[in-house]
Amino acid sequence: MPPQASDMSLAGSIESPFGMHNRVVLKKLLAEPKKHIGERITVGGWVKTGRIQGKGAFVFLEVNDGSTPTNLQCIVPQEVTDLSKLSSTGTSVMLEGTVVETPAESSEPIEVKVDKVLFVGTSDASTYPIAKTKLSLEFLRSMMHLRVRSNTIAAVTRIRNCLAAATHRFFQLHGFMYVNTPLITSSDCEGAGEMFQVTTLLSTAEQLHKVPVPSDEDIARAEANATEMAEKIEQMKEAGEKGKKIKKATKDLESRRARVKELKLRVASQGGLPRDLEGEIDYSKDFFSKPAFLSVSGQLEAEVYACAMTSVYTFGPTFRAENSNTTRHLAEFWMIEPEIAFCDIHGDMKCAEAYVQYCCRAVLDECMADMEFLGQHFDATAIKRLKVVANTPFRRLPYTEAIDILLQHVAEGKKKFEVAVEWGMDLGSEHERYLSEEVFKGPIIVYDYPKDIKAFYMRLNDDGKTVAAMDILVPKVGELVGGSQREERLEVLEQRIKDSGLDTESYSWYLDLRRYGTVPHAGFGLGFERLVLFTTGIENIRDVIPFPRYPGHIL
Image (cartoon, rainbow, N blue to C red; front, side):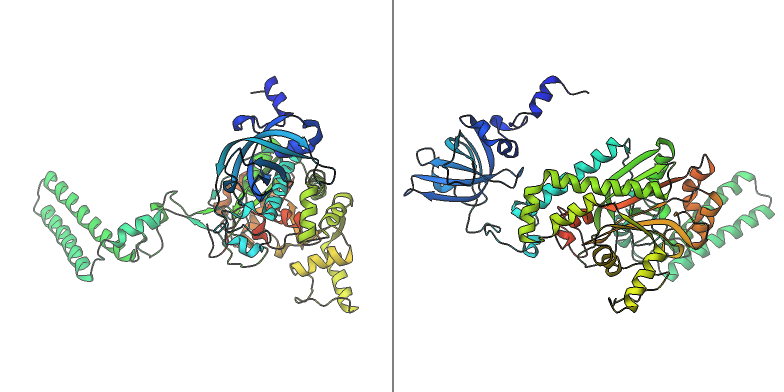
């Protein structure tokens, strides 16, 4: 439904169209503060600090609603309410009053003289876990449900929101369609095998576990019963018995043989999981009648839609069951994965570069106050780094040239790496960051990687040794984007799947895209949390996603 005129007018208002008592949005109020002097407004938010002064005559509250890093000072006199209920950090309030200009010496242009308290949600300062102004990120991770109230996580959240909005805006402006790819899949896009399995067999296993396991004697007895009936049927046939009796006996025999099979399967299913006679898990009994997993990527499904809609993108959660306790890995993270038909590796690189630069500019334009806060407390180079990436053309160089540069610097004694450099290796974080931070001092794109270190779906180059793959490397994080031109030649793709040790039948639907109207196409993937890491300068990826999932930890 198109927006109504009334909806459009609300967009320019400082009031929330959905809030109680025409509550204002602080970000909008503080964007043009002096414009609203003399107006009566309603403020809703949480108390950051509270100071009772004037011998208990009034309280100064610093209130924030999360829309901006800037607090609004609200002054509440004692005749309005019990001031002790308002002053604790973490208290939620809804206040009504008049916007007034602050004294000349004040750092903020306006404040609110409160004459009515509409709501108070008290907070016990003695037990409130994040009452202190300076808390480590490690401690905040132990308070996952409250950490967003800290200035740091609030700033990261606003920047993350900006990047998400910029992502959709960029692709929509360039004619891409947003496609929702499945979270449950039967295929492994990366061929890594580190996937979370989705199954209902465990609930079945609990039921099976309660059933006694048949003994050898039970099975022998059942087999003897079946043999006895089989012999009886033969005797009946020799005696010329009528077909009706034989038919009834045959049905009895089938029942006895089924009983033997059931007992043997129960033995094979010791531990609870249903198994076949060879002892393999019987996935025909599972919910999807075959093995299913949480998706590691939406790329393959996005290709399906790109091969009909031309330009599409996904933006959703993906999952990796890697037992990695590092500052760069999560078990659940978000991926942006565009796919473009009638596109080669060069168009792919151009799109990825434009997207990254667009996101950087969006943060610089919309979140400068948050970036300045993070710069003061975490990474003083973050804003400069963003400006460099936003305004510098990305240098492109083949993988072979990148290896030659690294080898040259090692030979000249300029750098010693923990992992030795050689052609055919997959570049590690130390190599990626050295290239982007020390050699080129900015963003670069490395392309044409050895085929043996890349996925089966990447297009084989004419040299037979490399594939049309590319990575964008940036200072601070190393690899930010990974992409490739996809293999559109049916025979080549079939061989690549076989060479990778994957089951061709499982990818028959993917091969159909090449059988019926194949098209040159390309795409890339960007781990959204790595983009937030790069942007904010935060060191640990667990601090840039609302609810991080990693080995041994889930809220």
